[in-house]
Image (cartoon, rainbow, N blue to C red):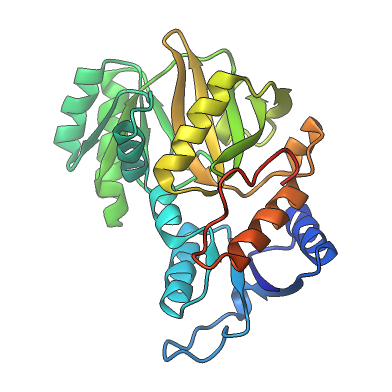
Length: 293
C-alpha cells in the first residue's frame, strides 16, 4: 500500500503517522506543500493509493483535495468533509439538520443585518469569521458600542469572507471546553482544554487534561461525525446549563495531547487510513474502530 502524506511541516504528528503506517507495511511518500504541483491532465499520483492531508492552510488544503479528487485519488479527509469543517455557517447548518444541540446562531449578509441579529440574540455574543480556525478573528461582543466598532472594522476589510457575519450567543462555560477525537464515525478519546481565556481554543497555553469519554459525549461526537460523513475529525463541545452543546467540528490536526489518554492515536489513524485505501468504495467497514483501530 502506498500512502502520500501532504503536509505543511513535519511535526510530531507527521512523524508518528509515518512510523505507524510503515510499521503496518505501507510505503509513505512525504509531500511537502511547497513542492507539490498538479498536472490537471492526469499525469502523476497514479501510484498512490491514498493521500492523507495535514496542511495548516484551509484554502490550500481544500484546493489540493479537490484537485486530487478530480485526478481520481482517494484522500483523507474527503474534500466534502473539509468544505464543511472550513465554513462555520455550513458546519452549523449540518449539525442543526442532524438534530444536534448547538449555540443559537445567525448568519447575516451585511453589517446592518448583523447588528439586528446581535440585538435579537442579546449581549454578550460571539462573532466568528466564516472561514478560520484556532480562534483567529474571534471576538466577544459585550455591548452595542463594541458591536458597532467590530462590525465597522469587518465591513472595511477587503475580502468577501469578512462580509458574511456569523453570530452566536455567548455560552458561559467553566473555564474549559471539550475536544473529542473521532476516527471514522467512532469517538476514540476526549480531553478538556482548560484556560482562563473566554475561548480556550485561541489560548496557545491552554492546559490539556484527560476527559472521560462518557456516553453523552460519545453520542454527540458520533452524531456530529455521521452528519459530516465520517473521517479524521475533532468535535468541540461546550458545557452549559442546558447540557452539552456541539460548538464545532474540525479536521484532526494536533493529536499529541490525546496520548495522555493512553491510546495509540497514530496507530488507530494508520489502521483507518489503510482500511480506507483498501476498501473498494473508499469507506471503512462498520464497527472497525475498537479502541486501538
